[in-house]
Image (cartoon, rainbow, N blue to C red):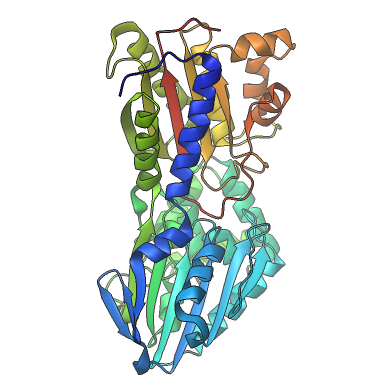
Length: 453
């Protein structure tokens, strides 16, 4: 379609429309409806078929930020065929359910509610028999919401471990490798406990590359990591003196063979376990692309697998925007660059923020005085770091506005305080709980056809 001339204010509105369009595409209830249907007494999930008359009990379990709408759709589908259900969700992510009991718990740092809910879930599947069917609903946040450590590792030890891992700059697969090896549920151990019952996991992916053994730390998936790898991660980030002694001892005991490894591919537990991804980051990006094109932008998907240092990622994205302005490559203006994934922040300051807000602040510095660029970065779960913001929006006027208010962006970056920077500017992206989670969505809009203001 023919492009319309847009000013910065309109581009900011466009970025928000594009973000919410992507968000709607990964609605968990829609994902369940897309893959599951009931005909007579047969439950069809993708290309799998379950004759419900063959099962004595149907149990529904799960954990994650999207577990409530997923559970609601399963209730709509199966109704009173469900014998019992238990799910753990993040505080504020609850909803009305009938057959399935819901427990609100702590995320990203686990708490007592999560531990109690995890114990009940493990007990339920452990007591399931060979004539039972277990439907497991997994989404991002599931790791923190299924906290049940090995004996000798207290909840306080687990909480300290998670805090250390979240702030050391480790990638999610590294964090989850350690989580799996101190857990009685994660890393395939839930599947082992459920055997010989039949089980099917419906999974909403929140990790780069949709690695099944990383999503929610893979409770029903063969684990590819090991105790040896855990020790390598501890040494890589110099965590020997920061992690609880009980955790270090447990990892060393695992290396010595005193603690059983997580179940691997070939374990009999997985003979009766199926895992299906029903939603992921690329689906949000593809829908965002449709919206941006409808708004008149020539659009390019950079990648749904961006990870690594947040500030470095911001520099690369802004370099592409500047190239569009200078040479019209890789696509001409008005342009939209989309990317997804999950970057990391090595926290050194004492401020408040998250990877998306920090991305936007680093980008604001890069695009200052450039031509007509808008950057929005947001978490699809509605929560960026320990804040009530999903992310933030910045443009080529952001720094000049900040300077007029006496704000020094370099100071806020050094203190990892992007939240308060954008809060003062009124540029936080606030969505509230979205009840979904497929990592982040970043939007760069470039338009050389307008003046800066």
